[in-house]
Length: 164
Image 1 (cartoon, one colour):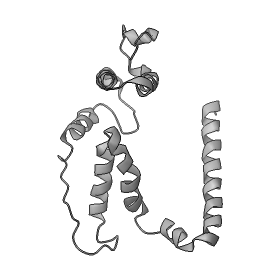
Image 2 (cartoon, helix red, strand yellow):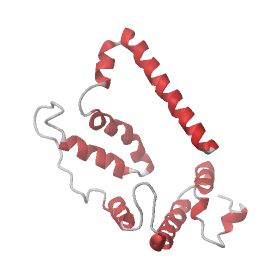
Image 3 (cartoon, helix red, strand yellow):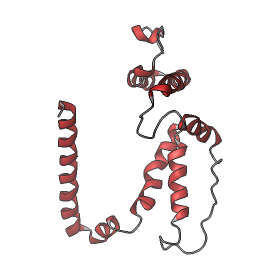
Image 4 (tube, helix red, strand yellow):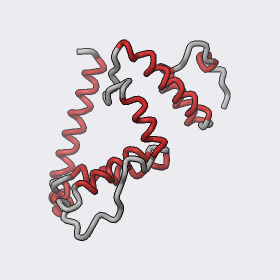
């Protein structure tokens, strides 16, 4: 196994052990909370809360999908009445259209076919450029470092000369 894979597995084991210790400790202090961990449709209950904070960073699609999942399981969640809002797939047209435009280029795990690699790379390069135009300061520098793989040849940021 590569060193990175070993580190990743060690980290997962640590988090799993930490979670189990947390459950043992919380079982004594707050048994009702422990019950909440084992409710049916836990993901449907948890994801809207986890993804809501990302809407401030223009990541509305994950939140939208989480709410669609809540709507899908509304009755099974034991909530009385009708779901207060009906979602369509056009609620976030911009984000949805961008997600759809890459659908044929790449799988959800990031894999692409050799014959669609150039189109997928160009898509991410353009997305990177648009994003960098709207960022400033440390956020921009961090995003630039994290997305260098999608930098087109001849990009001035290759030398680190961009000052925003």
